Structures are given as structure tokens and as C-alpha cells.
Image (cartoon, rainbow, N blue to C red; front, side, top):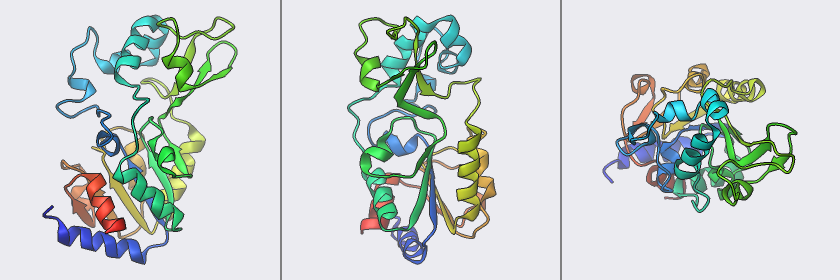
Length: 244
């Protein structure tokens, strides 16, 4: 991996920092074999009767729940996925008292599975589900093992994933907490995100420090503003910086 100089800088900055915040996107989970949205093999480039961004919208969920759940089960649920080196490296940084928060756009729960405790899931989680009629909570297993295409509550209502769909608002309290962490951070590491999904991507504009690190396989709109850009696989980069 021809990024020794950049990784050495990242390793040194991590050693010198006691208030790190991580902001991550789909690229963090691709190394756990969960496809992202916008790459060549991502969800947006797959052929369906309707565009994926239409299917995972609030309107589509309400109007065509059967087609929604067919796509959701087929393309958005990966119950056997395991954390990768990136997840474990971040969990270690938190255990060492260096990482204050993981702010993620992912919905797979892999950060917690790796051991991270303070995880702000801006777009919700597939692990949490609730009945839209009575509010009863259900697990991912309840949805996966449902005998019907549309998972139903004991009251007959539809079980909806606690995932933020298109047309739905992000949680104000969660966004406010994320903003507080980012604005107070000594060091902000952004990884595995194209930084095009708003309003979440707009949060990084609130960082006021001088150690903005971008780790992404492809270029982003913020590369020119970063203090350190590492164009590599986030799992390998973080593993070498934290454990190397």
C-alpha cells in the first residue's frame, strides 16, 4: 500500500489527539460485503422496475409496501455481515478514550457489533423496527423471518424499519448532538462517504479544527479543504494507523 507517508501522519495525529470524531458513510461497510449506493455495483446502478431512490421513499412504502419490502429484503438487509477492520479500529480508539463519537449514515449496526458504544445513526437502523399502528417494537429477525412479504404486527399493522426513507426528516435531536460533537472535535476523520447526501453531509462544515482527514477511494468535493487526504480502503488505512 503506497500510502505510508499519509498513514504515518494519520497515526501521529491520532496519538496527539484526545477528542476525535468519525463521520462515515456506505464505504465503511463495503469491506463487510454490503454494497453502497453510488458506485458501479451500487444499488443505484441496479435494474429494477422502479429506481431504488423511488422504492425507498416514504410515499412508495405507503403506496406499494409489497414491492418496497421485496427490494428491502433483497438489497438492504445483510443479517450475516460482520464488522471489518475499520469498525474494529474505531471501537479501539473509543476504548482508549480518544474517539468521542461515531457519526454514521449507515443502517447496518456494524459499529456497535464491533464494540463502539457512542454511535449516532443519522439514517436509523435495520435492527430496530416498529408497528406503524400500535408502535410495538420488533427485531431484524422478526422482519427477516416473516411468513408474509409485508411483515405484520400482532395487531395487524405493518412493521416499518426504523430507517429514514427519502421524504422523511432526520431526527432533530440526533442532528444537534452530531453537530455538537463535530464543532467541538479536535480531529475529524471522514471516511467512506461521497459527501453528497444532505443534510447529513452538511454537518462536516461545522468542524472548526485543523486536522480534517478524508479517507475515501474516490475524490470528494471537500478534498481541497482537508488537511490530509488518503485515497485508499478505509479498513486498511485505519487498521494500519491505529494498530500498526
